[in-house]
Image (cartoon, rainbow over all chains, first blue to last red; front, side, top):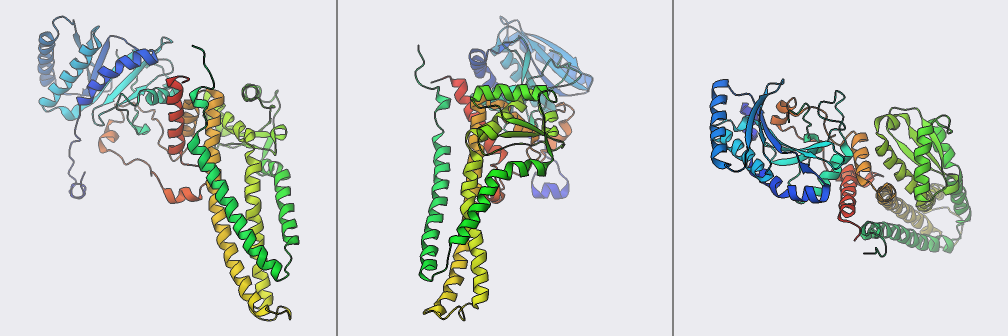
Length: 194
Length: 316
């Protein structure tokens, strides 16, 4: 925000960048080979609520686009509204690259319809070698990824994170994935509906 | 494929080692030049350095032998045995075995400020002290990493090194003060005995005083630099002992109150704050760093992450 913006109380919406989502497509191979992280077959984007009329029309558009784009891939789309008032589009499919492309398409659709500033994050669940789940979260406003490793799972009432493991993963994949450099922006996401 | 030689992350950190050597060299150089110049002047004018050196030696010796007891007493530490703190003892014992050290004594300080230090003049007479704060705030792997860092200080004889480095600094400080007094009594140019050249003596004492002060200031900064380098070496040692640099990195982030923490608040709840792009905490106040005995958390975490990457790549 510029000086005059601050002075006059103007707020510019922060630019939203979904392009770097595709970096996860390439990094996934490294994550699987070097860190034994396997994709779970689902991924999602999360955004602030939109009025229900507009929301259903967007959902319909997306489903049509999906049908067109992924005839062989069998991607499915499930909308979800969480108890904090945020909406999710949850995609499932066995082809990880198709999932990434679907997330990008959904984000771009929202941006094209003018809802870019409502986009919060994209989330990719992975299964770790020991069977626990971890998540790579993409922040649209920061155009960067960061890891989230809950100690038990995302519905843990104690809400504990495994910080050393997160730091380790971020350091390991840092060259292939644009990782968020500021730790205070590594926001966890609890009660993930994936 | 047989692994020959040490894994790559054991190879000496040439950058860090050179930095330490350079600092110690400069410190030594400063002392030598100073000693030669001042000593020549002093001897020429018959001023005796003997008592000064003896006094400084006594102070340094006392510091070396008693500072651990003084430090522990000053912090209010009390020794704990295995019955009082079985988990702590088990942790330290495992680390001591890993590091091939005799197990140090363990002391606990009742304070919510997270802190830990190692003291003692050699490995056989070492003590590790931890506050209840650090014990409660860190998870077990993080605490282990911190204890390994302290053990490395013991391995590296850091107390001995810093005492030697500061010995000369003490000596110069005493000398500077003595020269000042001599200057006052001598009146800076008059009345210091009836020897030939006594006029020059006052001026020379003034110059020596100035030189002493300057040398003391330089040695102060260099000693700080040496301390920072040895802290980084202790971080490295911790990573080598535990094999997990990320534990120490996480511990440092958690106990540092200046570095932003990895948050606990859900993304969706933090969204309002997120949108405003709150300016992060002060970064890189390099002037303060000159005076600091510890390197910045950012530098320490960055170096640990680099070790982490080396370990991930494999032994070669």
